[in-house]
Amino acid sequence: MQADKRITGRVVVTILLAGVVLVLFLVNRKAAPTGPPPPDESPKRMAMIDSASVEIDREVDSVLSHFGIENDWIQKRQIAIPNSTLHRIERRIIIPQDIVPVQINQALNLMARKHHARAIASENLKENTVTIHIDIDGIVTQTLILKPISQLQRSGRKVPYRGT
Image 1 (cartoon, rainbow, N blue to C red):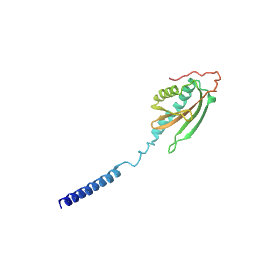
Image 2: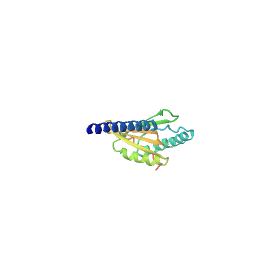
Image 3: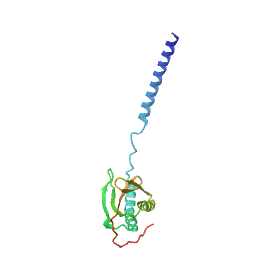
Image 4: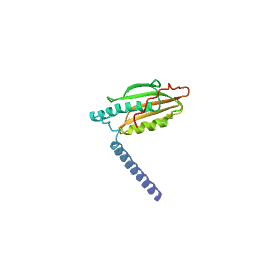
């Protein structure tokens, strides 16, 4: 008889605790945000990002010429950024193997900081490429995909670097 009361008491407490957990779960689920906050699409912010993107685009060309990367090695195209009036510029660049992609990333990061942006690199070992994204306030406005090629020969002309 005594054992039945203990078992019954434990079952009742377990059911009550399960009910409390269920209520807390449902309350927490309703209070939690359902996704990322909507991006700030204010015209002022978009104009600031667009202006910085144009400057960065010019300076990226300077950084590339500083490393002796010739225009013939670069394929450049514009890609529309979804849900935005902005465009991302993508450059596919073949480089000689004596150019170290980490140094290009460092130079791009230093340049991007002047515009309150950052350069983020990732390496794809399978394809032997390095991808560098330049991010302004959470929006990628430039993508550089570097592909080292062992047979690539320089033409001999060099353009001086004008940025730091």
